Length: 183
Image 1 (spheres, rainbow, N blue to C red):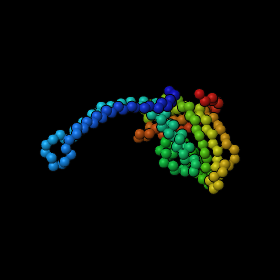
Image 2: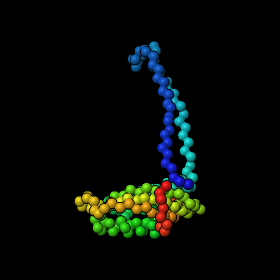
Image 3: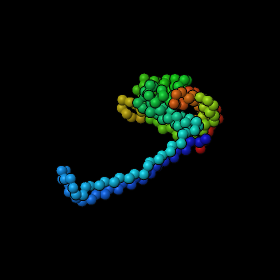
Image 4: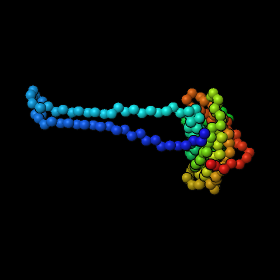
């Protein structure tokens, strides 16, 4: 199943009718016409379909990719989203790289374009195949200037995710030997 992003707009129709009759505005007046306000609103009914397990996996896989980008500049190996969406060997590898960048006083401005597809979901384990494109540019944190040339790589990977609490966590990323072309 390929991830498709759809913008969903929910239109609410609220009808508000105000009617006012003229009359005596004195608070102490016991007679005469009073002010009448009538308000009517259609009941709001929204239905949100629960995500399928595959949709949940893809949602959290995308969040993991964005967490890696966010943790790269400035480099923060303990970024809250990084440790939320990554675990195991995959987290350790990312943290090592980000810690290296910290030591070199480098950040990495990145964009990642995923083309993920869930290949299996069984209980609390899922596998995603992705042919993703990552473009990165190292930045000297002291000067804010680019360091070296930008680099774009396309990687063909299988990622194992584990369901932990309410999140699918990427725990293992294995590179495939064959090249891929993003869809």
